[in-house]
Length: 262
Image (cartoon, rainbow, N blue to C red):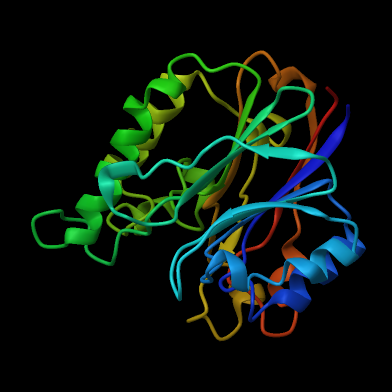
């Protein structure tokens, strides 16, 4: 059952329902994982997406904050949602496809502005969240699994516009990169995007603060698609839809795609 999957931090699914609809019409992924939906589940405009051929949705929501959802053309059964680090946030949802593949959709905390857990509670929460992901029993050698989402970390030097200038900036600090690496190692996850696109600068996020984001191109690769080793060889076609960052009233993130021949 081959399928194409996309992940996108939409920064309010209700405010940007038309952008989600545009993506579904123009790109037609079989599965779309959304983060930062900022909506209770019953307020997500699921009927709009169903009318476009996505009748299946599983989600966790909060009013005005966080929130994750999976929209699918394919039947998908909810497989739980875990409250990592006990934050009480809607940041994870999992679903199982009919072929037995489990999809985990994550929205990892951003971590605030100061990379010091003693001075910034949010940074500590981010590290605790990642540590809990690493130590979660279900990530002890998982099989037939895909992990996607806004992980809010750009791990490689070429995942940011300037490695040297961002070493002390939240999302690229050594402690964040190391902790994310421990999550990857715990599950033996394969970074599908970089397996497909191993070389060169690659970004999925550009700040709203930049008046000309496209020309300045000071981006970071915060959004990821991982897979377990048993299905990673079936992945291909990774890409980032940079153009979506330039759509009217856009999210500051661009969708990341990958296809799997399973």
